[in-house]
Length: 259
Image 1: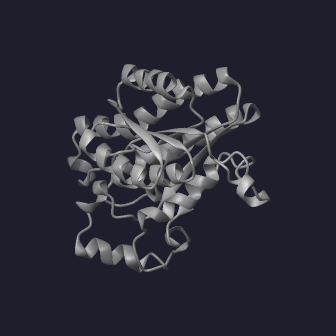
Image 2: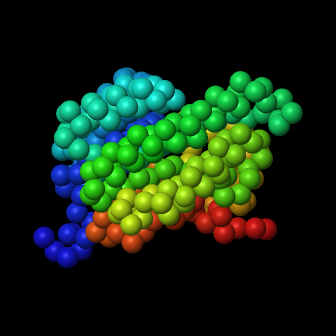
């Protein structure tokens, strides 16, 4: 194995991908599996998981699905227990679950606020607690990748609660990176720009798309596969060993644009 291959070597690692049945996270899981990682897809939809796993297995990768109620602590604890029983360990955690809603601020019901916060922030918080304790007790290098959002860096109109929840995910990730750096548990935020995922398709009106393209130097949406390189870097304790507490932005230049 060459120096560069060794630097990015992930063979034999195990990754739990929470939200792995979703459009973006299933591509991340595919990228990890293609690099030799055994992937565990955690989510609600067995149908979507079956489709994602078929693609992974067709490419020679390994993985399985664990049905998980993402906002329930007991379900997340069971996810860890099942993974340890089947795979023997966890090396990488990706927190990618997310829901969105577009309403004027004054019309947002409190129940909707809590629902979005419970999934986007609460599930990430609880998973970091549960898996973080396991990583600390195990005493070996590990990587946590929390899925943030470009709206967590700069407020985005019409998605007030989503933006607030993702900003909090960014903040938690930096705090945990600081807490756990000496234990070689790296915590980073992967920050996608505009990708046409399920949760934002419903708010992408023609006018909205025009506004986004005007603000994106690449003048296009991201493709889900374009997140894989960043995931492999952040997952690898060779190439990424000194990378923690970052907000790794993959956005076609959106965040660099003003007027």
